[in-house]
Image 1 (cartoon, rainbow, N blue to C red):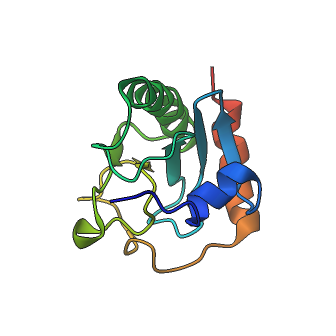
Image 2: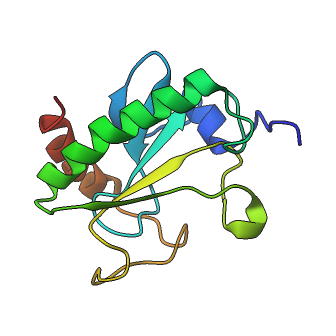
Length: 141
């Protein structure tokens, strides 16, 4: 399967589409999910073009995990909750809605969360997302 350079995450990485950034380094970008399943939902993507984990280079995989650790800790502090749910899908058939590898970081448990929304269904108010982003950024080490 060839990589679709027209996907929204590729557009974000090129600067052709906006996002609410939480963290960025040379290899990764973390930003607020515009269709969050709960408050504080963050996505982590590699800057490398890869559709699934199986397409990802070892160095990009390591960079993503480092960013997930860093941002995940900040999400817990910012949202004042112990624990996060971290997941990712590999392929459209299992729920991957954007064909660019990415991790989801959700504060708390998806099994006990009140008000958990369906995946990629409802757009959030960007102003509210910005508030959550600033709270998370404040807790990045």
